[in-house]
Image (cartoon, rainbow, N blue to C red; front, side, top):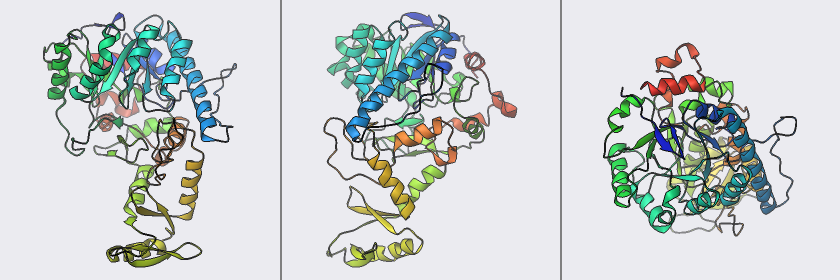
Length: 464
């Protein structure tokens, strides 16, 4: 394995190894500070980050607002307070070493307000902003205003070209790097376009080379590309290090930092990572963001798959192909379905899935009464954690998307808060990259070994 050459990033020479930011409350100040102290770039998540009271106790996230708009403002306040708290922890831990970045999602609720609020409250502590999940045109302007570098996350040269031409060309001096996140292999939300097949992964090298070619064409020859998504063994990328087709290049690790001493996820979550098999991470489109995302196929995800499988086209009145009436509910009011679907619906009703819930696509899904109550409550309790949400039909500017709320999705804020704070991992959304099964195969983790962040960074630098 070639020796890693330091790169100047966010104003300082660092190891070209970056901790990927993971919300909600997963990439904390403790883990990112330790990563920076090891000589790389640590990234804490400013996506609904945890905050603490004057005694160091976790501040519970509770909403008093009676309307979605009121709760949305509370969420923004929580986000700013938590981001500042995590930055302060990370700054103290890094001991002047490495660099510290914060991660935000452009499609999260109140993204611009939270980004400005955290940067305003952490002047001198944060050196860079990583931002994806959407097209973050404004992040360059905001970063430049606060004198920090910005690192957009893209999945294609085309996406970066759009960002550059519309916005980034005006502040090139603050562009610290471009994160190429493999849309087939990364954990969390993935940037697959409508023209790409989610079932046919592409080799990342030609895509990164195309990105480098465009960057060089607009004078960004020395701006690093950060390869993210699916990176496990650095030795697999040895040929990239001095290759003019992609270099200068750095590498981001999102999944591996989950399993460290400093990682604050639950022990159950850490133990589950060690048991994953190849194929246990599933690419799906249940997220209320509308994006594809990758998560462990557990009971939570299986319930969503089954819920969507219990789905048929329907009408409230008899139509040419929707003419078989089936009574629903206590009043027995009929819906009309296709003849080919009638027996399926009757079987679902007999099995206890007696609640029909309409979707925005003129279909109906069938769930148990208890599940229907939970779905409706979660939709009512919406706190506007996204800029717009398919599950609850929230939209942060007008209050609603104007579309029917979608029961095939879920409250992402609720489940990610739950898993980050100790809930059973089988019952919650468990994001992970597609190479997470390597925890069980990599001899570094033999006999359940959990390294410190420093041990992990040192190991990665060897190629393993």
